[in-house]
Image: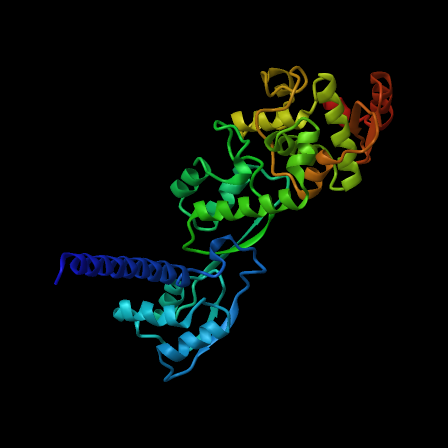
Length: 356
């Protein structure tokens, strides 16, 4: 055999080996992808809705895999069979009635089939206007370990939603209000990422980033102001737009926001068990949290804003008011001058304004 032929044969062998390596790597990637959950933990409750799945006595792995794929619960019956081949100790699939959903991986489904036990889920409801303190309590009350909850809430996340959030700011304001269902063995970290995903979806649907930029605000600043609007107004969208206008006008003119909700939030952080009837915190809280004395936005949001509050900051009313108050009757009263505002206080806020 000549050197030229040997060289060609060597080249062919090298190419074949390379192709085998590529094919092997591709097979591993395909397998890992196809045993993962269809939606993973990041789906919404509706997308992850559980559905009944019945395994009849005598059905084998191939039949069960085919049924799971046909039901849209797994990506590939073949990957399901390969998983069981690679894990022979998990081939004992028990008959029975199960509740499976599209955010369960093959491993989770097989675990339930091995034990005959339906994976336990937890339902979590977060509301607009709530704080991170409430989020922490709900997670712990749902059965998640306190240490894991604290670690997840204090972690720095590389998520598109959080790009403009200062590194030293908490996750306050970024817990999207909704009702979710997660598996009890989910990681708190993954649960928070699911909430970020939902909020980012709203941010994109409403085109908030560019709308906030048009008003000289970053996304973080827009969320921060929306959280104040959420706490200072009723749930009515037009009312929130009016309140947002007052705050934006004050920001643009360099006037203090005058939001007692901001000061109260800081007071609650410093002493969550304080006497709420003691209003001395309105003067004792220092800058940058004392919005009666310090111009500009607070360093972080003060609650989780809802969709309407976020939209209100992006599209405030066309009014020019500088003041508002909530009257004894629960209605909002607006004014363009301090004299008008004081008159509103005397007429409509005889009881509530006494404590101020």
